[in-house]
Amino acid sequence: MSKRNKRIYLLSVAIILAICCMLANKPAGAAGSKKPIQNGQKMYDTQSNIINAHGGGFTKVGDYYYWIGENRHNDVLVSCYRSKDLQSWEFRGDLLTRKSHPELANANIERPKVIYNEATKQFVMWMHYELRSDYGYARAAVAVSSSIEQPFTYLRSFRPLDNMSRDCNLFLDDDGVAYFISSTRENRDMNIYELTSSYLDIKQKVSTLWVDAQREAPALVKRGSYYFMVTSYCTGWEPNQGKYAFTSSLKGKWSSLKDVGSPTTFDTQPTFIIPIQGSKSTSYLYVGDRWDPTQYFESTYVFLPIKFENDTTLSISWNRTVSIDTKKGSVSGKSSTPKEYRIKCRNTGKYVIPKSEFIGDVKLSYTNDSLRWVVEHVGKGLVKIKHSTSKQYLDVNPDGACRLSNGTDSRSQLWQIQQQKDGWSYLANQQAGGMLSITKDAKSSLPMLRCATSESGKQLFLLAPAYE
Ligand code: GAL
Image (cartoon, rainbow, N blue to C red; front, side, top):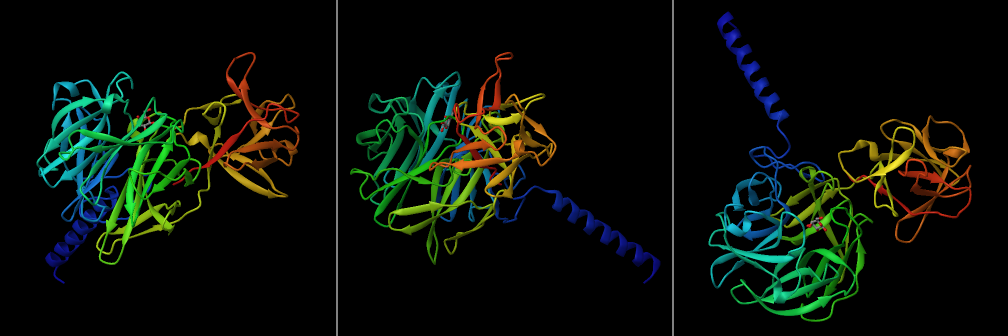
């Protein structure tokens, strides 16, 4: 090789290496790539921007799945993405902003959903409407557009048949009849309304479900002859036990509610179920929001395959990554067993965290690593509970106050987890002989983790796996 050719050769190798490095540094989901969905991780669109489509819905138009959801950045309210494979998402624009209508200037728009009306050739969006200040309005709102990718024309907000209306969803049945589903009566009940043929208004209420059960975040799907609805309990941005029910007629009676997923529904709240109809089969994908209760913008998404054991029984299990073949209609996931836990106190609804001298509790945040604990099984049904970042163990002082200490053989570091039917547990300390509780400290009046010498005052805790 001549000196000149050698230089050209080396320069070309250097340029190729530099391009490879640049591509390797791009976030997952970067241009053109079709990577499995990494559940609970930030998702990026094809331009490497974070996807903002929370509380979203999915609408199929031709070969494209459109993902339309909440975007709270700047003055945007609702954004739109599309994908043929449900894995690489292209941003298509903002459908509603604060400038779209005077009623939206100071609005909080949640859980927007879009369906297509064959007769009017319009895309119709229903959503939850509030003012930014609080959740007192409890209204639904409607918008329309002749193109799913173009800004929608906002029409109005109102209470369906004068009923309060918060978390909501839309459902388009095979016969072209559309339904609006929403939590009502201060979220105590769930109403199903049939829409008028234009889909722009309520025609009639067809059902009030699970009176006083306090269900919200409804997601509906039809499979075979049955309709399924997955919902959450009402705990704001905090995850809780998902439940589902089924019926053979939207105007008829529904089954009772059955648990689905873990006691935290894998740290999600339902938003949609996507039917993926392919050449080989039809699969059903659960989509949940992993809201971060302390930092909304750290919220992520979780997509999980739904398994049907028979015509009326479904289940969802944890998969760290999910791959979708929209052509065949199949979904496959890679399961994983979480290695760390967050410990939730039933009495405070908060999570156990070491504070300087003692152990207290804080609100959940998925980015706070100090909330993570490792459960080490040491035989005879006993465990040691190690704080993940400091590597110290949950221990009890002779005065009953909990603290962290280095690993020893002391019985005060040994715990027995007494799990109850609903997944929550009592934790019995082997030295103290009593159970874990969180109570206000007499001096500081701050909640403190303690362990009494007897069973009295015992409280329930949830060892919630950190699903990732
Ligand atoms: C949840 C609801 C969310 C949002 C949140 C506000 O229960 O599902 O959409 O409204 O409360 O706290």
